[in-house]
Image (cartoon, rainbow, N blue to C red; front, side, top):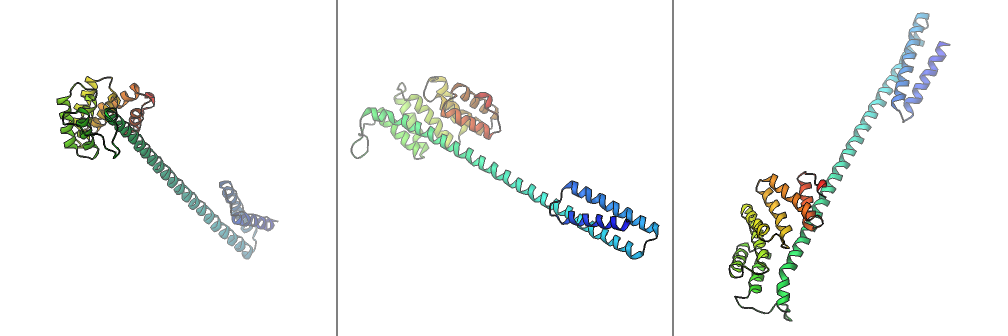
Length: 272
């Protein structure tokens, strides 16, 4: 009877170990059955069973123990592999989110530049239609629209020193025109492009102080915040970007401010 029970327990061990789907409860069950087999071995030894019968049971226990250990090791390897795959997927998701954020910032910046180009070219269109060749009518050196457009063209092509001279000449000659605030803003932009952030801040501040209702106010406030951050004054820069969101919540500048704050790890949701 004892031998028959041991054989059934060994068969159960084999079936569970070879099933290919072993859970933690299966392992606990197998361990319990191994303990029962070991108890039966001790019982057989006490009853004086044959050495061959005891040896066979001991061999069975050894085989099932080895299979049990191998199954547990395989489960650990599979779990480690799954954890690694999850980590890789999380890394890929974070990289994708970062790329989408960068693309969104580029689109918003391009929209802002397009708005600036339209604002700068409006006086030229009002002054006269372009000629069939695509060029505006020539104007004299004292013509404000021509002087402004020349400086702005220099800015667009990256000739920032020439653009600075042109915008300053425009302000010296025509300080009371409707584009005076724009000229000051573009002077600030020239300095910003040259990474002369402290000088850029002063020009943006001129726009904010002298033309608080200018169409360049939001842009000047945004770029002032950028320049402050770039120059190492993070606190004032972040405060400036939050002010953009509060004052111009639905503007392109507000979207850029939110994205910049997000990139800095600052929660701007309360500013929405």
